[in-house]
Image (tube, rainbow, N blue to C red; front, side, top):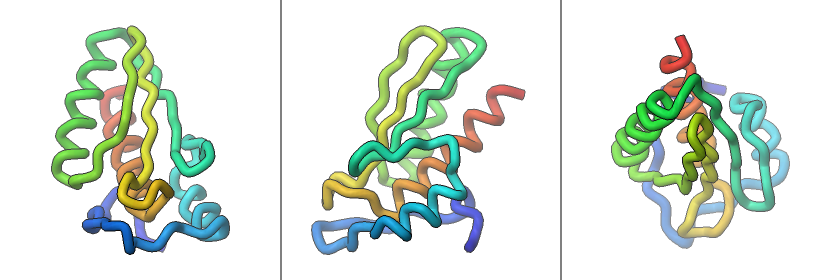
Length: 112
């Protein structure tokens, strides 16, 4: 399987296939810090301080816009909670895991 962070999200519509449980398990192996909650992916990112958390949000916005795949997030001082799912199908698609991997990479870059 290719590195998800180097892939590009594909346009989705209501005909986009929902991932099966076995597909989710296989993709989750490449984004292990993310928790599957129903039909959404969730992760809490922790940073050194508020400024770094906001830098992550800025980078997340840049990535999401480039991928045309937009997560829902909440900032609480040094923590950023992110939920990601494919809105068009109200389920998980490969795009959710691609975005998750890209966000993991962005967070790691801010932590160094």
